[in-house]
Image (cartoon, rainbow, N blue to C red; front, side, top):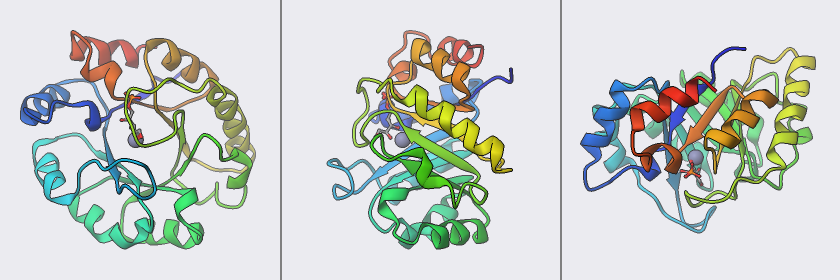
Length: 217
Ligand code: DX5
Ligand code: ZN
């Protein structure tokens, strides 16, 4: 089985010393850097915006995996592109015209990811699965780090893997929320390609070793 890609979530980093944490991630075997943008409307929390992320992008040497938890994410395609992001993830629940938004993201030169909340079924992706580069399944209700993993996500990963296989889609499966060594192992076994982890990485005594161990799950 291929090793999972690891995308540490910036939300759990130490914002009083972001440069230090980003240096560690740069040196690590992490594949991407996961960036959570929240607007206090789509989710009940506000994180950070583009003025801060400009510096994060400058300090990071990892491809940026941007997760927008905001209403009308299509308004910010240019800003995300200007950050130099590799992947732009938008919530299915935030986009009545998801097909158009996916095309707009791809036309801008970024990879397009569609994100599902825990209460949104995988089957809703039937008509767009061939068009997306990634599906991000939320394994917690978005808005906060450090929440408990919703175990039903394992069934959703298996269902999504089947859908991808039968649809000639090349979409990656990424999981976000409550991912640690134990839930990470179950997710990889179920067919996940990319693991996002915030607290499990940034609160670990040894960040580099933790990332290495996650890659070897
Ligand atoms: C939650 C965010 C996550 C969060 C994960 O809304 O999308 O990316 O940072 O944090 P952990 O891994 O600590 O659950
Ligand atoms: Zn996220």
